[in-house]
Amino acid sequence: MSATRSPGVLGIFDSVDATVKAIHELRDLGVKRPTVFTPAPNHDIEHALDTEESPVRLFTLVGGLTGAASGFALATWTSMDWPLVTGGKPIISLPAWVIIAFELTILFGALSTILGLFVNARLPQRSPTLVYDRSFSVDQFGVYVVPSADRAEEVRRVLAESGAVEVRHGTREVTSEV
Image (cartoon, rainbow, N blue to C red; front, side, top):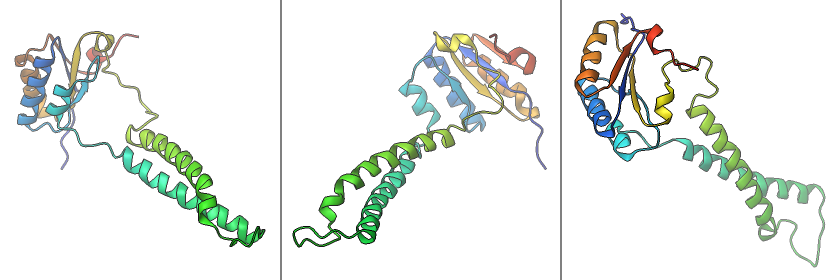
Protein backbone atom coordinates (compact mmCIF):
# COMPACT_ATOMS: atom_id res chain seq x y z
CA MET A 1 0.00 0.00 0.00
CA SER A 2 1.53 3.29 -1.00
CA ALA A 3 0.88 6.51 0.85
CA THR A 4 -0.42 9.45 -1.11
CA ARG A 5 1.98 12.35 -1.55
CA SER A 6 1.19 15.95 -0.79
CA PRO A 7 2.42 18.57 -3.26
CA GLY A 8 5.36 19.53 -1.07
CA VAL A 9 6.46 21.88 1.66
CA LEU A 10 9.07 24.56 1.10
CA GLY A 11 10.82 26.36 3.93
CA ILE A 12 12.73 29.57 3.17
CA PHE A 13 15.56 30.51 5.53
CA ASP A 14 17.76 33.56 5.99
CA SER A 15 20.73 31.83 7.63
CA VAL A 16 22.81 28.70 7.21
CA ASP A 17 22.41 27.79 10.87
CA ALA A 18 18.61 27.73 10.66
CA THR A 19 18.82 25.71 7.44
CA VAL A 20 21.16 23.17 9.01
CA LYS A 21 18.90 22.94 12.08
CA ALA A 22 15.89 22.29 9.85
CA ILE A 23 17.76 19.58 7.94
CA HIS A 24 18.77 17.83 11.18
CA GLU A 25 15.23 17.98 12.55
CA LEU A 26 13.79 16.70 9.28
CA ARG A 27 16.26 13.81 9.33
CA ASP A 28 15.23 13.05 12.91
CA LEU A 29 11.64 13.06 11.66
CA GLY A 30 12.54 10.42 9.08
CA VAL A 31 12.94 12.54 5.97
CA LYS A 32 15.95 11.06 4.22
CA ARG A 33 16.71 13.44 1.37
CA PRO A 34 15.26 16.91 1.46
CA THR A 35 16.01 19.12 -1.53
CA VAL A 36 18.09 22.10 -0.45
CA PHE A 37 18.62 25.30 -2.44
CA THR A 38 21.58 27.49 -1.53
CA PRO A 39 23.07 30.62 -3.08
CA ALA A 40 26.55 29.06 -2.83
CA PRO A 41 28.01 25.69 -1.86
CA ASN A 42 28.23 25.29 1.89
CA HIS A 43 30.03 22.57 3.84
CA ASP A 44 27.73 22.79 6.84
CA ILE A 45 24.74 21.98 4.67
CA GLU A 46 26.62 19.17 2.92
CA HIS A 47 27.52 17.63 6.29
CA ALA A 48 23.93 17.99 7.49
CA LEU A 49 22.64 16.26 4.37
CA ASP A 50 25.26 13.53 4.79
CA THR A 51 25.61 13.30 1.02
CA GLU A 52 27.29 10.37 -0.60
CA GLU A 53 30.30 10.73 -2.85
CA SER A 54 29.41 11.33 -6.44
CA PRO A 55 29.52 8.27 -8.71
CA VAL A 56 30.61 10.48 -11.63
CA ARG A 57 34.24 9.63 -10.90
CA LEU A 58 33.50 5.96 -11.59
CA PHE A 59 32.18 6.98 -15.01
CA THR A 60 35.47 8.83 -15.56
CA LEU A 61 37.56 5.84 -14.47
CA VAL A 62 35.69 3.37 -16.66
CA GLY A 63 35.77 5.79 -19.61
CA GLY A 64 39.51 6.40 -19.19
CA LEU A 65 40.35 2.72 -18.97
CA THR A 66 38.14 2.01 -21.98
CA GLY A 67 39.91 4.78 -23.86
CA ALA A 68 43.36 3.41 -23.03
CA ALA A 69 42.36 -0.09 -24.08
CA SER A 70 40.78 1.28 -27.26
CA GLY A 71 43.95 3.21 -28.08
CA PHE A 72 46.14 0.13 -27.77
CA ALA A 73 43.58 -1.99 -29.65
CA LEU A 74 43.31 0.52 -32.48
CA ALA A 75 47.07 0.77 -32.87
CA THR A 76 47.46 -3.03 -32.73
CA TRP A 77 44.68 -3.60 -35.25
CA THR A 78 46.08 -1.08 -37.73
CA SER A 79 49.63 -2.48 -37.38
CA MET A 80 48.42 -6.03 -37.89
CA ASP A 81 46.27 -5.05 -40.87
CA TRP A 82 49.03 -2.99 -42.54
CA PRO A 83 52.34 -4.33 -41.22
CA LEU A 84 55.28 -1.99 -41.69
CA VAL A 85 58.57 -3.38 -40.47
CA THR A 86 60.97 -0.54 -39.69
CA GLY A 87 64.56 -1.17 -38.64
CA GLY A 88 63.82 -4.74 -37.59
CA LYS A 89 61.51 -3.64 -34.80
CA PRO A 90 58.49 -5.81 -33.91
CA ILE A 91 55.16 -4.97 -35.53
CA ILE A 92 53.47 -4.70 -32.16
CA SER A 93 55.43 -2.11 -30.23
CA LEU A 94 53.66 -0.80 -27.15
CA PRO A 95 55.88 2.24 -26.39
CA ALA A 96 55.05 3.78 -29.75
CA TRP A 97 51.32 3.49 -29.03
CA VAL A 98 51.33 5.25 -25.70
CA ILE A 99 50.48 8.58 -27.34
CA ILE A 100 47.30 7.37 -29.07
CA ALA A 101 46.31 5.43 -25.94
CA PHE A 102 46.86 8.57 -23.83
CA GLU A 103 44.80 10.70 -26.21
CA LEU A 104 41.91 8.23 -26.25
CA THR A 105 42.11 7.93 -22.45
CA ILE A 106 41.55 11.67 -22.13
CA LEU A 107 38.82 11.73 -24.80
CA PHE A 108 36.86 8.78 -23.43
CA GLY A 109 37.34 9.94 -19.84
CA ALA A 110 36.00 13.42 -20.63
CA LEU A 111 33.04 12.11 -22.61
CA SER A 112 32.12 9.57 -19.96
CA THR A 113 32.39 12.26 -17.27
CA ILE A 114 29.88 14.39 -19.15
CA LEU A 115 27.64 11.35 -19.60
CA GLY A 116 27.93 10.51 -15.89
CA LEU A 117 27.05 14.08 -14.97
CA PHE A 118 23.91 14.00 -17.11
CA VAL A 119 22.86 10.56 -15.81
CA ASN A 120 23.39 11.39 -12.15
CA ALA A 121 21.88 14.86 -12.37
CA ARG A 122 18.92 13.36 -14.24
CA LEU A 123 19.31 15.90 -17.00
CA PRO A 124 17.47 16.99 -18.97
CA GLN A 125 14.50 17.21 -16.65
CA ARG A 126 11.18 16.61 -18.29
CA SER A 127 9.27 18.70 -15.79
CA PRO A 128 10.79 21.90 -14.45
CA THR A 129 11.26 22.44 -10.75
CA LEU A 130 8.30 24.41 -9.53
CA VAL A 131 9.66 25.26 -6.12
CA TYR A 132 12.67 27.34 -7.09
CA ASP A 133 12.63 30.91 -5.93
CA ARG A 134 14.92 33.64 -7.24
CA SER A 135 15.99 34.54 -3.71
CA PHE A 136 17.81 31.19 -3.52
CA SER A 137 20.35 32.57 -5.98
CA VAL A 138 20.91 35.72 -3.95
CA ASP A 139 20.90 35.33 -0.19
CA GLN A 140 18.31 32.85 1.06
CA PHE A 141 18.17 29.10 1.54
CA GLY A 142 15.36 26.71 0.75
CA VAL A 143 14.48 23.28 2.08
CA TYR A 144 11.88 21.39 0.08
CA VAL A 145 10.25 18.17 1.20
CA VAL A 146 7.54 16.06 -0.43
CA PRO A 147 6.03 14.26 2.56
CA SER A 148 3.22 11.79 2.65
CA ALA A 149 -0.19 13.40 3.04
CA ASP A 150 -0.49 12.51 6.71
CA ARG A 151 2.94 14.00 7.59
CA ALA A 152 2.69 17.26 5.66
CA GLU A 153 1.56 19.29 8.65
CA GLU A 154 4.31 17.80 10.81
CA VAL A 155 6.97 18.78 8.24
CA ARG A 156 5.47 22.23 8.00
CA ARG A 157 5.66 22.62 11.80
CA VAL A 158 9.30 21.47 11.89
CA LEU A 159 10.30 23.94 9.20
CA ALA A 160 8.51 26.79 10.97
CA GLU A 161 10.02 25.94 14.37
CA SER A 162 13.51 25.70 12.84
CA GLY A 163 13.46 29.37 11.96
CA ALA A 164 11.98 29.51 8.50
CA VAL A 165 11.13 32.99 7.34
CA GLU A 166 8.33 31.55 5.22
CA VAL A 167 6.81 28.12 4.76
CA ARG A 168 4.91 27.40 1.58
CA HIS A 169 2.69 24.42 1.00
CA GLY A 170 0.86 23.24 -2.06
CA THR A 171 1.38 23.55 -5.80
CA ARG A 172 -0.16 26.99 -6.20
CA GLU A 173 2.01 28.65 -3.55
CA VAL A 174 5.32 27.05 -4.51
CA THR A 175 5.28 28.13 -8.15
CA SER A 176 8.22 30.44 -8.63
CA GLU A 177 7.90 33.70 -10.43
CA VAL A 178 9.71 33.87 -13.73
